[in-house]
Image (cartoon, rainbow, N blue to C red; front, side, top):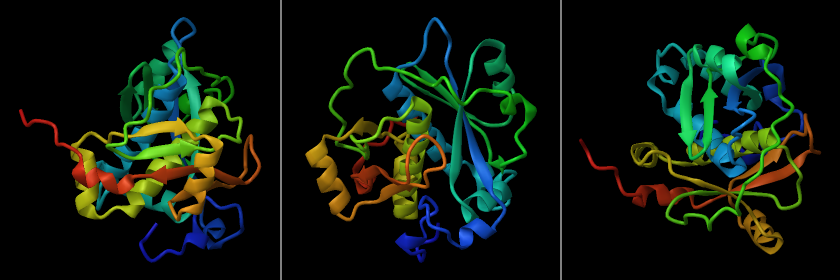
Length: 245
C-alpha cells in the first residue's frame, strides 16, 4: 500500500473497492503442529507476524527479485493470508519449497511467495486449514513495550490459524507505516514484536486513538470488523542493534 492510499481503501476492509477487480492472490503460511509437541499459541502468532515481515523485507521480494512480481500482484489486490498446518513428512515436503522459515520460541512457521487463489502448489494445497487450535501452557508475559505490540480484540474467538493471519496483517500495516530508515532499523534488530489480547477498556482506547487497525473482510470464521490494533510501531527506531560479528 502506498503512502498516498486512503485508509478507506484498506485491502483488509470488507467493502467493495477497485482492489476486487485485480487478480486475487494469497500469501501462504504453514505452521508446524506435531501431535506430541504442538507450539504455544502466542509463539505461533508472533512467528507468523515476523514471517510476513521477513518476506516483505527479503531482497527476492524487491525490485527485480524472483518474488517481486508476485508480491506486487498480491499487494495490488486484497491482502489475503491463509495459514495451514503440517507435521512430519508433510512439513518436510513444504519446507523443500522456496520460502522463509521463522522460529519463535516453540513455534516454527514457513512463509511462501504469494500464489493465485486457485494456484497453490500441490505440496501446500493438500494441507489442512482446520485443526489449528493451540493453547498457551502458561499466560503470556507482559508485552515488551520497547517494540511494537499487536493487540488482538478481546471480543473475538478465533482459531490460532485465523489469529496468525490477523497478526500477519498487523505486522504488514506496521511495515507500511514506517519510513525506509525505520524499516531498516526494525529489520536489523530482528523484527522484535509482541502479540497480545487487549483488555476491553484498553481495546476501546486503542481503536479510538487513530492507530493502524486491521478490519478483517470476514471471509472466514468471523464477521467483518476490527480484529487488531498496532501500537508502538514507531518505537522500532530506538531498538538496540544486535552486535556485529
